[in-house]
Length: 388
Ligand code: HEC
Ligand code: HEC
Image 1 (cartoon, rainbow, N blue to C red):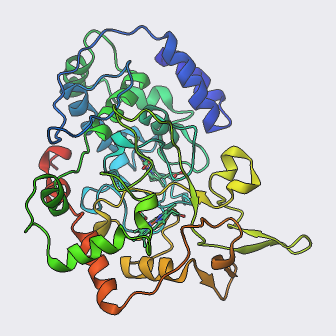
Image 2 (image 1 turned 90 degrees about the horizontal axis):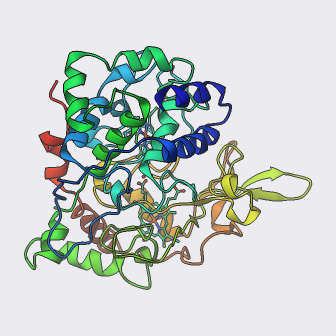
């Protein structure tokens, strides 16, 4: 199947075409039944993530996927690995507003933190059709707009780099009797990404291990603000993963929420007075082609949010303090430059972004609460990285 994917990938003009081709091929690939030996690092009582039936979690796949994630040989010009845009210290996100691909092409979006992705209902900042990590991973691998790892057109050359003796050991442990191919590379990368679970923050000790002293009085006041009707944060960032866009084995409702938070209101067409998000990224409407989806993005998890600045899909807000000012104002008013426009008046803005007033102390309490979602063990766990 590797070589069929390879030929078809060469023909691809559009990445989503590759995605659909891959899915079709996936269903005809010969599957070996694998049983899962994987222990999820979650507390008893927590729901387990859902995992595709044809790619059950195994420790051997996680081990292989991790080595590939950190290997620059996955990019055509050997300049970039997945880890080049997803750094452990930034919760597997990046500390610059936009990412750059292996050929230095700029990505229009901010590299999201990879935290509890196994629980994500949908993948990427604004796509309601990408529901598996296996699908998502094809974008950085084969995408041409922008070029990230740039494999399209270099499939054979890239694949040959995974035939070393070291890789053979890892591949045969993960996929006995199957030669290295892109299908297996994707499956192991997806397994590794699923293993990036972070549920050991002070907030978890407080909320799920009944240790009342795990967070400060200031954090508690901030938590109450977060869950209040005044601030409404929990409407979109609720649940144990601090995003309503969560799925797991016990959740049966197919909810894929996206919201316009009033970041922009750029004038796009002077004749018809049309305004909204900048043309280069209008969010969900690009996928749905519906005007009413303009500016709608997925609310990300807020776990480890302290370390994954800058914020929002385009990294356009630098700090947590400014994020709170933005919500307090009920959107963002940009007064000069190309992106000028008052996001507070965006007609498609969510009704939950209505603005509020906080005292200096309350604002600091809210930030203190958000910082209790930082899980130091996740950010430094050597089992998630390859020792240099
Ligand atoms: C050039 C930088 C770059 C590289 C290289 C890169 N990514 Fe990403 N990654 C991004 C950006 C930017 C996004 C957001 C894309 C979007 O929303 O359109 C993203 C999104 C993701 C997501 C979705 C996260 C979510 O919350 O939905 C996953 C998973 C992911 N990347 C894994 C990987 C893997 C695995 C690799 C290697 C095969 C990789 N990335 C390579 C920049 C990069
Ligand atoms: C209407 C739903 C909604 C409400 C209410 C809401 N958010 Fe968000 N939040 C979002 C969406 C959607 C994004 C991503 C927006 C984008 O990138 O354009 C986001 C992004 C964020 C980010 C940046 C995340 C990142 O990884 O870059 C932070 C921090 C945040 N919200 C905190 C809060 C806080 C604190 C509150 C309450 C004051 C709040 N949110 C209320 C939907 C919401």
